[in-house]
Amino acid sequence: MHQYPQRPRPDEQQPYQEHQGYQQYPGYQDEEQRQRQGQSQQQQYQHQPPPYPQYPQPPQPPQRYAYAEQPPAPEPPRSGRSRRRIWIGATVALALLLGGGGFAAWKLDWFSGNGEAVSFGKNPQPPAAAGKTDPSAPATAAKPTGDPDVLMPTGPKSAFKQTAKLDDGTIVAKTRIAGAKSGFEGDVWVWAPKEYDDPKYAKSGFPVLIALPGGNGFPDNYWADRSLGLQKAITDGAKAGTSLPFIVIMPVLNPDAKYYYDGSDIPGQAKMGTWIAEDVPAFAKANFRTYKSRDGWAFMGSSSGAFVGMKTVLQHPDKFKAVIASGGEIVPDSPLWKGHQAEMDANNPEKLAQKLIDTKGPEVYINFQIGTKESGKERMTKFQQQYGKGPVKMTIRDIQNGEHNGWHYVRGMKEGSLEWVSKVLKGPKPEAG
Image (cartoon, rainbow, N blue to C red):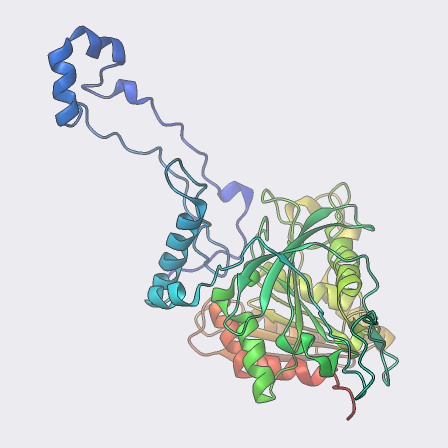
């Protein structure tokens, strides 16, 4: 069985070998040579293949899919092929890879509307009283009632573009934000459940789940790919009463694909810790109805994203309450920490958990997920035995026959982790009456 690497490192990447020019292949003739051979030879070439063999493409470095094992993105359009045809072909190929659902992907038209502007929270004006309808009256913004913890969108609003559509009509969309506190500018994907646009919840806050990918987490976040099923798992769970209808925020994890940054403010590097802990939540509050308290905020992540989510919850227990950490790592190990031991310790979950235990809170909740076909449970068990006490509440969920990939981690969430985190956080409340 193939063992996935915990994180691709720069020294693991094989250098690209430049391909020799096709002029060096036997039988190759340039244009001048063909012209010297005369008109008859030129006509012959119109009906026969060229005399030189088809030379191979340049050798490619080994494919390194992200931890969700996503297929590569579609290639750029070539002359004679439209962008839409390329996307449709990629859609069918992806569906076939996922189990022979190519026709279903075509029928559902997953990518219909991609690139179009999207707005969230289109709360209609409440119906006017009978006999008092005034079509010219401007719609008024909903105001929170009842729960003082509800935070209405603070603005400014971001410009969203659709990247995927789910079967229930909900949208995954992308925007780009410049972090006011980190100084880092990056892409963020978002998804809001169907309940978010339901007039019954127009004055309610919604819990936020910040989803972090594994690997370098750049330039994409694979949780935004509908094929992994994260959003559908939340939708189905909300219908079944086993999950809250979370808003899912999916930022890039790193500033580039050269190194991994442990989601931390490593001296001399982009401030990715501030990006994750400050700028991304501020963006969510600017655009969505959320909660002021930590009771409405949690992380989920896989592999390196699991580490960052867990580290951020332990580091900022006043802002975040829980994390689902799948196939996760326990300690920081970026090569960029060299020479910065004190700063690395300040981002070490072992030391952060001990600090919470020593100061007696506040309580945080960690739910590890681990596939029975992957390694790493020993690290989780040791961490739980040593630090799973006092205010640090910890559980470990085994995913039977699970491997180190996003599909299996979503299965674990459907089997119980979504229900676990839903019991820890608060959910939206419909307007009374």
